[in-house]
Image (cartoon, rainbow, N blue to C red; front, side, top):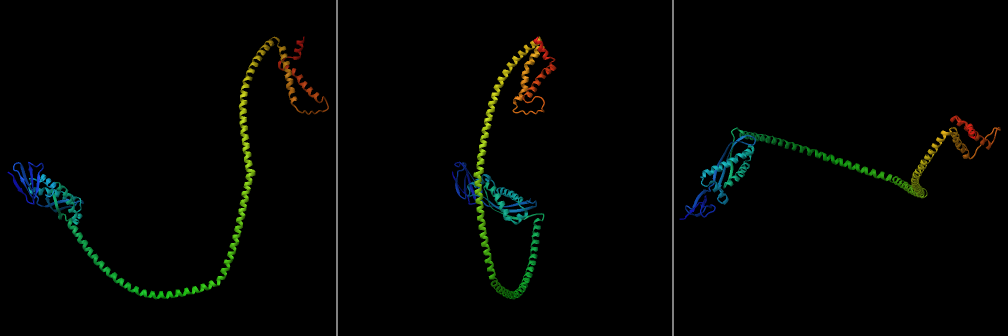
Length: 427
């Protein structure tokens, strides 16, 4: 058996069970219901009026007040999603229970908004407070499937007289404004009266000023005419002198211009002469000097290179020659050593005779050394007192005297009498 169920426009019918994967929701309509296999439940769509009282809530500045708000809410039957959410939340609950849940939600948001505003803001701008509560509460109730139709702030009260004080302050402010307005009205009246008197006096003074101005204009125009006449007269008298002075000045300027031109030409001539002399000096002095300097530097560099090369060659030659001389000296030294050894052996045998032989060998060398300076002399000047030999004879005699003194010198040095030794060898 199938039942046919109908619901009014203020309620919704929820069918669940067989043949329905999800509950069938019918708002203000009719449908068939199969007993036992299907279950039908109803949810009210009536508008609920909620009185929301929030007592002794501290506002943003710490002043406690109490607020009463009136909200109109209902389960939204036109939206399937909201109806489904309401069925999940409130199906099987009474309308009173739904009201209680919605009222507690609104009261919490109302309390929260009160804590973010001052008493003055709530009192003076009730529309702002209502809007804030409405917007914040609507989002939460929407998730429950409840639509907030309206919210209005009904009453604001406090137990500490804060609102009364605000009213008294406003009353005093209004009274103050009234007194100020009255004083300003009296002031404005006095000002308007004073302005009327001032305008009257100004008109009088303006009339007198116009008369004085007309008189002044007449005197000024007359003085101007007199000045113009006198100026014309003075101009006509000085015109000739001025023209003559201008003519003289023009002549002087022309003369000065001629002098300037002459001076400029002289300067140009001098500059050209200076340029010519500089070119002549460049050609006759600077360029030859530069060429001579370059030639001398080239010669000096060449000489320096030649000297360096010669020095290197001479150093090499000296090195080779030195090695040869060293070898010759070494051989000569060996020979002389052998000769001296032999002489030493002979001296052991002959003693004085050997000494005499040595002296006789050296005498020619001594004579050569004594005569060497004379062989190098280009000119000899001899002065004679008239006694003794003169000329080459005297010079030869002095050399022979030196030779005669040698045996005595040898005897003093070696204790060998050369003359006796020679005689002994002859015997």
